[in-house]
Structure formats: C-alpha cells, structure tokens
Amino acid sequence: ERVGFAFVGLGRLTLEELLPAFAECKTARPVALVSGSPEKAKVVAAQHGIKESSVYSYDDFDRIADNPEVQVVYVVLPNGLHRDFVIRAAKAGKHVMCEKPMANSSQEARDMIAACKQAGVRLMVAYRCQYEPYNREVIQRVRSGDMGAARIIEATNTQVMGPGDQWRFRKALAGGGALPDIGLYCLNTARAITGEEPVEVFARIFNPQADDRYREVEETIAFMLRFPSGTMANCSSSYGAHESKDLRVRLEKGRIDLENAFAYEGQQMRVAQRGGKAEVIDTVRMPQQNQFSLEIDHMAACVKENRVPRTPGEEGLQDHHLMRRSTGQPKPGRLSRLHR
Ligand code: NAD
Image 1 (cartoon, rainbow, N blue to C red):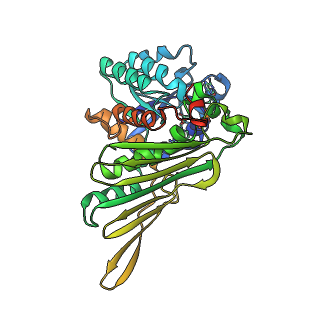
Image 2 (image 1 turned 45 degrees about the horizontal axis):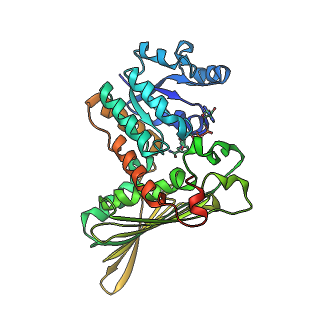
Image 3 (image 1 turned 60 degrees about the vertical axis):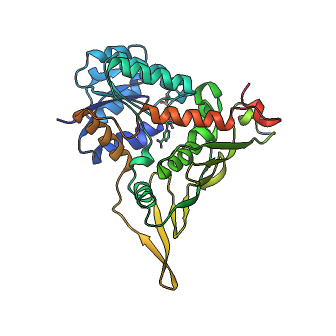
C-alpha cells in the first residue's frame, strides 16, 4: 500500500514539479488537495485521480484529521504560512513534509518541531538537493577522504525573478529574499558536504536603491562560512543575476565541479585529479532520476518504517540559526534596513 500525501497549496511547485513527480514514485501517491480555489482544485484532483471528497479549503483543512487515506501533509505555501499549516497538520495527527525555507524565523521553526514532537508525527524539510544523486555523490566523495581534505567550497545560486514571484518580495510572506529562498541551497549543501557546523559566518548584502522590489527583502548576498576542520565556503546568491547554480569543491588532491548542482535537472559532474604526471579530468555520469520523486519516496519510507527523515525539522532550524547569525547583526547602511 502506497503512503497517501495531501498537498497544501496548488502553486507552481506543486503543479509543475511535485504532482508530476508521483509518476516516478514507488511508495507514495497523492490522495488529497488543500487549496484556496475550489474550481482549480477540482480540475487538479480529476487529473491525478484524487476523490472530490478529499479536496479541502484552507478554512476546513482541519477536517483532514478524519481522512484515513492521508498519512502525510506536504505544505507548499509561501514561507510565512508554513508554521501555521505544519502545526495544524500535526494537530490533525498527520506526518508533515514542509517546503524550504522551513519558516520565516528560528522561533517559528522551533514551534513547528515542538508541535510535531507533541503530536508524535514525523517532520521533514524538503531539501531536495540532499536526495539528488549527483549532490549525494559529491558528499560521499568528499567525506570518503580519498581526495584529501576539502579546503574551499564555492556555491552559487542566482536567478532573475519573474512576474509570478510577487509574494517573494514581501517580508511577511517570504521571510527574506535571495538568502532564504535560493542561497539556502548553498548553505545547506556546504554543511552536508563537510558534515560539520560552521564556527563562523559572515555576510554582506546589496540591494539596488532604485528597485522598489527590494525595500523589504535582499536582492544579492555573499556569505562565507568557516568550518572547524578548516574548510571555507564562499557562497553567493542573487535575484538579479542570470541563472547560475553551480558547486565547486577544492580538495588537497583534486577538485570536483558540479554544474547545475541546485537546478531541477541537468547536473554535470567533473572530477580533476593527478594521474601520474598528467592532470586527469573524469566526467561522472549517473542515471537521470527525478529528485522530487526521490525525496517524496524517502518521506514515505520513513513513515512506513518509523524512521527519522534525513532532513528533519532540526535541519531546517539549524539553517535558520545560521541565516540569522550571518545577517542578524545590523551593520551600517543597507543591511540594517532589512532588519527593522
Ligand atoms: P507559488 O506562488 O507558485 O504558489 C504559492 C501558492 O500558495 C499559490 O497556489 C497561492 O494561491 C497559495 N497561497 C495561499 N495563500 C497565499 C498568500 N497569502 N499569498 C500568496 N499565495 C498564497 O509559489 P511556489 O513557487 O509554488 O512556492 C511555494 C513554496 O515552495 C515556497 O515555500 C517555496 O520556497 C517552495 N519552493 C521550493 C522549490 C524547491 O525547489 N524545493 C521550488 C519553488 C518553490
């Protein structure tokens, strides 16, 4: 029997990536929808073989407690709404999956973890890159130690925002700008690669003065992490630069490049090492797999086998701590404006 998932929020991610990903899921199926738009939800339900009686509005969402087909509630709303819906799902007795960033603040993340603990349900934050095979291969190769110590990690996540991104510029709904939305992948991946927690974090923000979209949230951020073993991570993220989502690791005995590391697909991995006197560059090829299907199947397996997910609520909380620490102390000028 496949584990039944309910989706809260029928926006772009749910419609374009998550629901289609079930075609490649092995242990999960969509069984319920929660939407502010009953007409849209009806159409989507029909497309995915979901019963009309399993379509809920945000107001009557709590009735989901009475639907035994739903085992996991997957919250895919704007970030500022994650906390309340995760807590309501836990109170309904359902396991919870929550999109990244987990919340708008560390305090909200703590509330969510506490609610799930009290209800005795699992909580997973959807850090899809930690389920993507090439990212896992980078983590495994670095942690194996075969290439010596990792000295420098470079992670970049940039993209230009479009007209459908209005809530992402409102601090109350988004929590912040490029950092929590896409820079988060750089932060989370640097931690996953080293398996360590940074002892120092440092960030600088830039907002174009003439662009009204960046009155509440940051457009561009560069940040640096120093890990206890000595690895340094140089990360950058922007809503104002052409798409670039790359990861590089410089180790004592080689380097690993992962192009499109944080993209939905198109990862390209190269490993350069010394082979005798020559420099040998290997292209690493792995079977294409849908990372959304892999993360959904992971949550389904955790529910079936009563295991803690690889990316539990605590993982989201730790990233919120670090984002707060890196940008939290108001600095002169533009940075302080972000933290009124
Ligand atoms: P979206 O704008 O396409 O969809 C948001 C949905 O929430 C819409 O259906 C909208 O109607 C609904 N909604 C309910 N209340 C709302 C309100 N008060 N204001 C605005 N919308 C409201 O957004 P999205 O891109 O699908 O993002 C949803 C979540 O998924 C976010 O947390 C985002 O960070 C995350 N996300 C993750 C990835 C990933 O790769 N894992 C990619 C995109 C988005």
